[in-house]
Image (cartoon, helix red, strand yellow):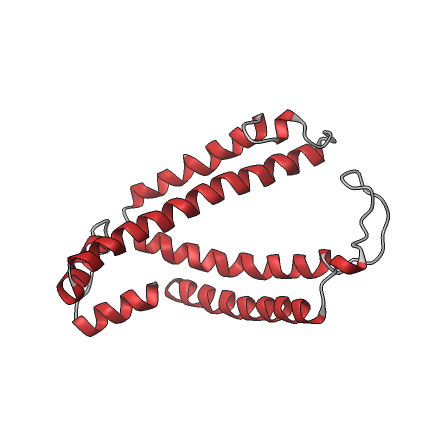
Length: 188
């Protein structure tokens, strides 16, 4: 979406504002070029994509945190504190909601998007390497959270999945290094 928007604006010779009116200006360009329907569909689609991402992250990450705390405290599976609406779920939901709103005081939404991209480039190789390790485990003992830490052979990664995850890890490590270098260049 960023590439399409950048190409559209570049070919039109337009620079959008860095404030909250940037999307509206991009919608205006779409209105002029392709008709009012396309500009409206763009704004509705952007809203839908943003809202679904927020809801997914709020719910999923809060559940992961609640499960993590439950495992640390040795709570049984399905304990009310670790479920949706439980104490740890609500605590992390509040943490995900209100502290990021302080970033709005910076009045730089484009900068926040770029920072999100850089941090995502740092997180993705961690996720890929973690999945490589966890989904290829063939030995180990019992843990508090599970009966066994062995992944059954039929559920382990095959060579295609391992190659894809390794490629993902290498690609995102390269992207993370590139993004961090670009972000830190003005300050060094």
